[in-house]
Image (cartoon, rainbow, N blue to C red):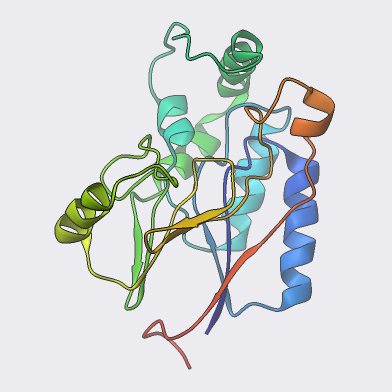
Length: 202
């Protein structure tokens, strides 16, 4: 079974459409979205509706969860343009109708197949970062608590990487990559494809 996985759309409709076209060209058997469909771009309603129309499993990202929560003041983390990004997130949340919010509530913490575990930040928290600096001890702790599937794939980092048996695809709308919005907001879409046994097909 060939899967195409994508994440961190952040309301970037042109990039989502380009990614979906690329994924269709690869003719995957199924799609899985790893979360953060919303928050941060100009097309919040359109992106949520388009992902929902795919009918694929969608993991809940931290941005998806926070969009459903009461607005919070900005917590400075040292990212470029974070004040503007926070304000855009507040604006995009205000554009959503009850229909889009209901779609966000259908997103799930993890998607599990026989040989694959999908999540956003980590299986434990949607805002935890698993990257090359994550200790093997932490990965082993997570595996002991959340499953022994040989392949784990998450989103959240906005960077493609593979470490300790975990992988992440690149984000479609990487607002924290650098301060140059013209390059960070419109990356060339990439696809994380996985081919193997899932227990649901050949």
